[in-house]
Image 1: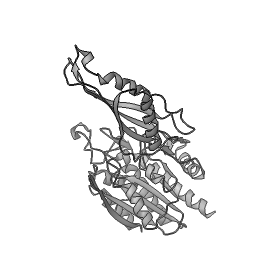
Image 2: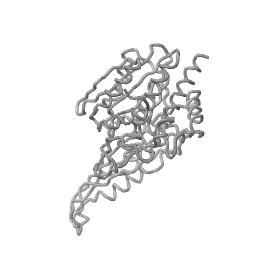
Image 3: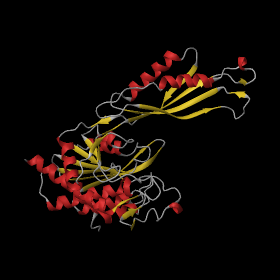
Image 4: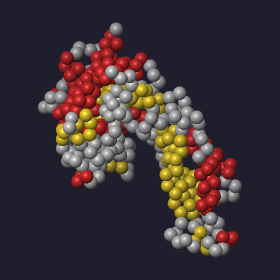
Length: 385
């Protein structure tokens, strides 16, 4: 049996749970929760063309309100293990840090909120429930993980009033930042068809590259000026492809791939319509196609309210810092949870996530556990008053 958050974090890090492998991590967490009186369910979801994924749902209590904690035990690949100072799956403690893949993102936070919840249910009498939504598919396609786990839970009659996701939200120090939303993400491809020919006889060819550049310029016109909680939406061209490899050949085709990180002024569908309209206006007689990848990353915002204030106050009490309410960064599984209940994200410092020698402060894991437990106390106390 693990005795504290640091021990549990080390045990989870020792599991080589590189997406889509579980590596035993969910079993360790499930056993600890069962011992503390949580009802648990292990669920495997599948879909065509994607790997099967193990997930864990757990709950203590049957009544409302229900505060859920969510996270992922899967991690990104380590790269070359020889580049690491220590074995990336050893959970080595050195220099006041715990080292290993997933320490920051996000096994350290899972250990902290699991131990906080287990300590809370054994030392407090309260009206309500605590739930866990743990997936092994956040770093992967995100198809057989949280989104399906939420759908399954709803079919079982489960309801969540609020949720905290343990993503590594802090840029520099524990207590820096709470994420109250995330930008959406949409991928697209613009392809222009020309006519191949000899560069010495351009009149016999139709070079698609100048046309592609002109159409890209139309896409790059600013989409908006931002909102009270979000920066301006932004389109970035991430790849340009053309040419035959020869200097004396005008290519037949040119292609640009792009990504848009968009705020809550847009949906994926309204963005598709806007970009298609922009291209149509300047295309003239160009032969082109504009296509988009399926989007499961909408923008969302949890507006500041008494719940966000409760979380922020617990963080300030535990760290002495008032956290910034932010919507920066990439996507997370909070985008799925936001359709079911208000959700915020708060975890460890993310400076080394996805890097060689990923690590977090030992003291931060202990303090994070204390913050989560303070949130639980304040959350259920406020509902009883």
